[in-house]
Length: 139
Image 1 (cartoon, rainbow, N blue to C red):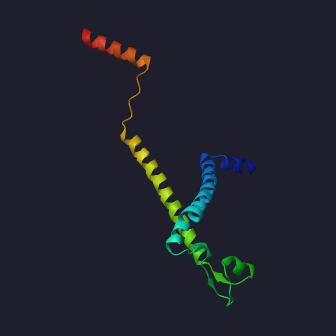
Image 2: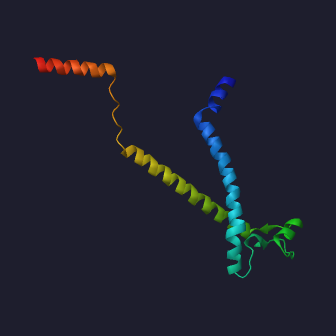
Image 3: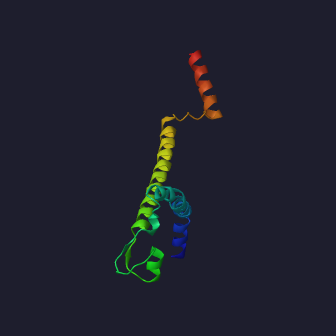
């Protein structure tokens, strides 16, 4: 059973998938920073200084100045701003993934369109062809 697991774990597809997951996790932190630190501040400025990450609906009836205060007090909230940031992050990741797959498909199509050049015949085949051609000329 241990041998089977080793064979499974060391297959190319599993290793490729693990590398993809690690790169995806690192990429998601970059996208989160892009959304939270680059995209949302100008949008907040355009909407009158609204910080989307602080938008929430308080279900507990208390009065809190920010989402952090509501969370600290243990209030039940619906975190609309966090959800909006997550949707924007997902859209960015989906778009980048689409562009990567589109590029890979373009390369794959280009490789398929290129005709495979015939390999040069071996030296033995060349000699046999020369003998054949000489026999044809003779007879």
